[in-house]
Length: 431
Image 1 (tube, one colour):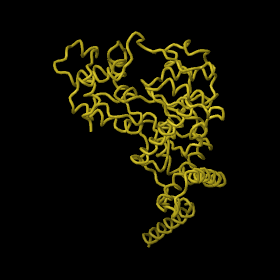
Image 2 (spheres, one colour):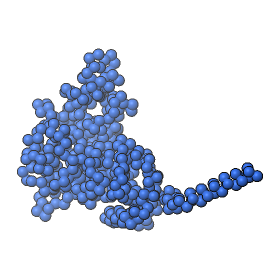
Image 3 (spheres, one colour):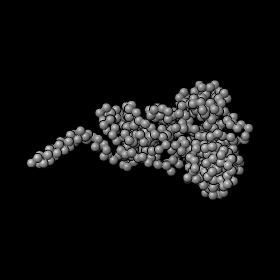
Image 4 (cartoon, helix red, strand yellow):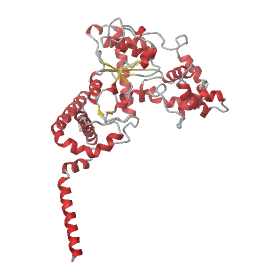
């Protein structure tokens, strides 16, 4: 009898607990978790930089909005419309979807935000970058002023820009799948901000980046002339702001309203320039960090002095390191792909300049943004001023040290940069 009573009591207690649990469980949360459009694609996100979420409601709203827009775009890709919209209609539709998502989130945030997302995202937020939704750029290319339209030089440079952007977009469309257009703070970590003239500049090393930083400092009123700014001030003074230093609203606003530009260089020439700068001159970072690892892995019978200092890396050894999938030391921005540094298939750059036509392109850009007329792009060589610049001829001399197979693999390594920025093959035997 006593056992029967105890057993009945346990059953009643369990049933009561189940009723309480069901009562407390929010049915909206169950529906939300089962919605097929809201998923976290961990493989898509960049693992290099983690962002810790705060309790700030504005950040939570922006994050929820980003997920909502990404979800809507996924749904649209699964159910395409019967008619193909024009580019302008696509832009308007993306902008309206963002505004619509923000209004819906604002209405229901106080009621549902914490309950819907707190449990499920607690782990995700700690382990992955915060997503920022990115629509098409409002600025495609600054328009020529009426008085410039009769200037043959400006018109020619303007048409060159249109062609470069066309090729870049077509390449992205053909080889990249970025329909979601989700940008993390990692993607904008190389972009410098100049708020006065509303400029975003993506830094590509060995493509005039030091002098471009000088120009941005002058535009920002930090100096009166580019000649007054020393190399260490440019790179280590921290006078320029980076885009990833802003909150999500600041990043999103600048990406969509500022003039975004980058300058690139022929990939092999850029690579040789980086090698000469970092390994053929004294350097207290690249020699011990990269040089020692390269010599230790790829040089047979290396001397103790070479292993100790890391000095004297040969170009062929450097290429062996670059092409090795199991590199003894990681990648560096000075020889990384422009495609990885600036994400041109995610960020719709308004202006694409080239190192080979630096003077014309740079001064045309300054003209377009309305910079002071006395400000021109500096011509002086930033480092090792007595040494000849890396030219096509010098680049060919370095690559002549390699086997045809190494040249081909090097070209394959930078293939997307060659294709995206319309550079021709540097050697005839490449395919």
